[in-house]
Amino acid sequence: MHHAPARFLALLLAVLIAAAGTARAERATLAPGEPLTAALVRELVEAALPAPPPGKRLELAIAEPKLPLANPSDRPVLLALDALELDEARQRFTAKLVVRVEDRVTGILGLAGSARPLVEVPAPLQPLREGQLVEPGLLGTVWVPESALAPDVLLAAEEIVGREAGRRLAAGRPLREGDLRAPRLVRKGEVVTLVFQSGGIELTAQARALQDGAEGERIRAVNLDSERPVSGVVIGRRRLLVGTTEGAQ
Image (tube, rainbow, N blue to C red; front, side, top):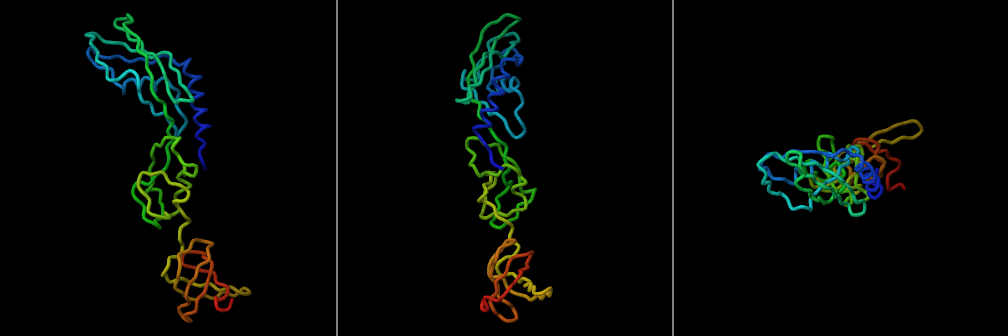
């Protein structure tokens, strides 16, 4: 499963632009002397936008005006957001903030800032050692700018859980396809069961693995009885399906 940043951005911003003209003006009230803060302005803008799809959101940053702004009024100040517009190409928004005191307009502030699309992606909650199996409890999520995601970033926990780290992985960093591998069912140095099958007859023997191996991989081992090298295909936990010894091939 891979993301499509350009397509998502175009779709999300198109929806927001279309909705901005019909969205009701969002309102807030400042107490006498209470300053106008960036957090309050972001809340007003976010409230005026339609909810993004699950796992997506816009990160807003206010560029204009420089905030906080002092509030000299000794009476409550009513703020109303108006004329919200989004610029798809520049990932920016503009709006007007109408300021009223006792139903009288005392000023109109021009607002501008960035609106950067973010995506929620799985990430390890703690560092993972090489070979560590990824279990559900080891995964959390982080918000990442969509434009910064590599094409092979894994976006769903289902693509990660049950696989193992191919190398040491940092906590809080999105995982890429090359970071993980199929779980090793055989580890180098382990005693494994060799399974010989011929004409409906199955024989077993013990060997020591010379390599790690995932299901379906062919690896080398040494028969513990004969001390002869063999190769076999990993068919289960510490189990190799063996045809002929390497010396007989």
